[in-house]
Structure formats: structure tokens, C-alpha cells
Amino acid sequence: MSEKNINWWKVALIAMVAFGLLAGGFILGRRTIDPPTPPGPIYVPGDTVYVDKPYPEPVYVNKPTDTANVILACIKSGRYYELFPEKVRDSLIFVTPEDSSLVIRDWATERFYVEKLFDCDTVGTLTVKAKTQYNRLEWLNTTFVPVTKVIAKPTPVKKYAPFAGGGITTSPSVLGQAGVFFDDKYGFSGVYQYDWDRKKHVVGTAFLLKF
Image (cartoon, rainbow, N blue to C red; front, side):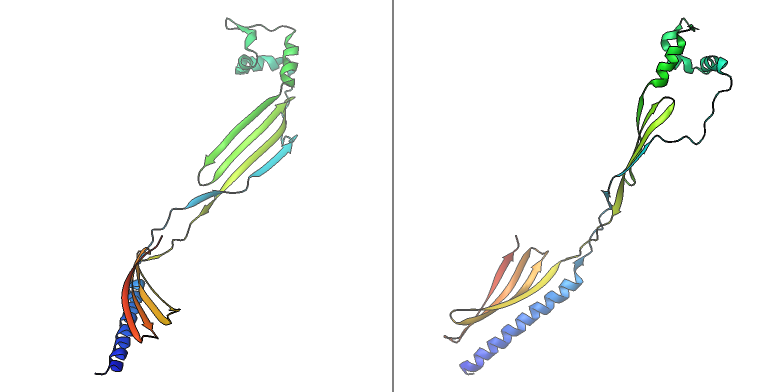
């Protein structure tokens, strides 16, 4: 067999090996896709919603018709003990003419309230703030921070991924490379180079590592 025929035989063998690597890697890559584990839902805080309502109007007002018995009714309900504890001594309630000033002072007292109605990881947070004075609700504020459920789509990962490439050098020579990556990190390839000046074929292997 002549040298020319031997060179073409080498080229054909190298081409067959490269094609086999590509075909095998392609088939393995398609059949060995690791099914990804679906990640759990992620709850992302949304835009905060503020609602301010100054001087809310009551929807219903019930005024007592018998003002003479207002304090007696307050005492009977136990509310008097809470509002004016200093007027209670030895389980007896001492009502004096100065009680009118106490009622007026309590009527003019400002009271501020902050209540977190709920704080849920999957819904959000709702906080209510309020101010009362002069027996009225003077100011009402609600702050709602919602959360949005986001489900990330898993990305499939190939167990085997084929690759191929080629190039030229200044020798001059041409080269080609084909191989397979494992777990998207380690790879092996076959390398072929043909030197035009020396009419020589060179083959080899390479180990590859992704960083």
C-alpha cells in the first residue's frame, strides 16, 4: 500500500472516530438529561400600599338619652374603674363635682393605636394605625405589604454534552477537536492536526476541565 493511500486511510479513520464521538455524545446527551428538582415557591414582597383617612365619619352614632345616669352606667359596666382608677378606694367609688373636669380631660386625651392584624408569609402584612380624641376617630391608616408567589422554572442539566471545534495554525496546519463533557464540568476529546508542509497527520487526546 502506498504512502498516499495510508494517509487517506488515516484521515478516514480519524473522521470516523470524530463522527462516532459526536454521535455518541449527542445520543447520550439527549438520553441522560438529569430531571431537575423543582424548587419550592418563593414569596417576593410587593409594593407597599398606604391608605390614610383623616377624620373618618362614623356610620352610626348612639347618644345617651339620660345623662344623669351616665356615670352610674359606667360604674356598673366596670368601665369607670379602668378610666379613673384614682377615684376608687376600698372598693368604693367617690363621685365629686370635680368629676366633670376628669371627664373633660379624658374627652380631650389623644390615644394612638398600632395593631398588626396579620403577618403571613404567603399573604403579606397588614398594619392598622389609629388616633382618637374628643370621642372620635381622628385618623386611620392602613399599611399593607403583599407578597407574590414566584415559582422558578428548573433548568435541565445534561449528564453528557458533546462538543466540536476546529482551527488553523501558522505551521501551516489545520486541526479539529471533538469530545464529550461530563456533568458540565469534566471533558475528554480527540484532537486531529494535519501539517501541510510535512504532509503529516497527528492525532491525540485531551482532558478538559471547566472552572
